[in-house]
Length: 261
Image (cartoon, rainbow, N blue to C red; front, top):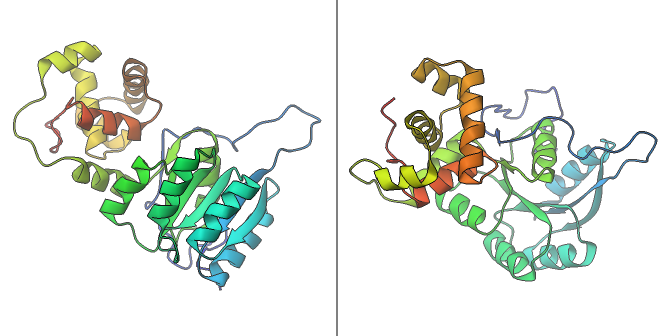
């Protein structure tokens, strides 16, 4: 039995709060003009366990928008599969044998493939999450995730966005830099032209808060928070919350402690 459960089922460890899109766009991914045949999303699956590969393949084939172009049982096969079949998406087991998942990512990065990689994890390891994102991973899901959320993840990365859980974002920020004393530098804030309110929201994003929580803490509406985030994206030249968090830490826009808001 596959560890992936069917849409609508809460069995087998459905944890709907475990993964969420960051900056995800609504809709089913790629759109097409009326009357034209669908453009299938080509997916490759790399996992050592046949039950996982076959279970995931069967569930994806049940959807009209996906086509599984191949499977691999080890890392070496995974790299060859991507180079030969050029899938849109690779579902990659982080613990795949032969050539580790991290090494697969390095090989694909060197090959400059356009394949979007979604990393499958039995559990999320903080150091691996950080390294994987640096190597170009676009999505992170755990193996007890429902197929409904996996499908949403694939659609999200196909729009060019990231799919990562709130907990993973918070862990990621914790990995990036050690705790720093002091407040953010005023000159950096001036260079980015972020307002005080926008810096507060950036700090909350870094801490992993959702829009509803940010709105509550700042006594704002969720609509206003979304408006501020849109302005922040434009000013920083980013497209989603994860990129905001990464850039904020890299450029020391905020103190990475829990924001005082």
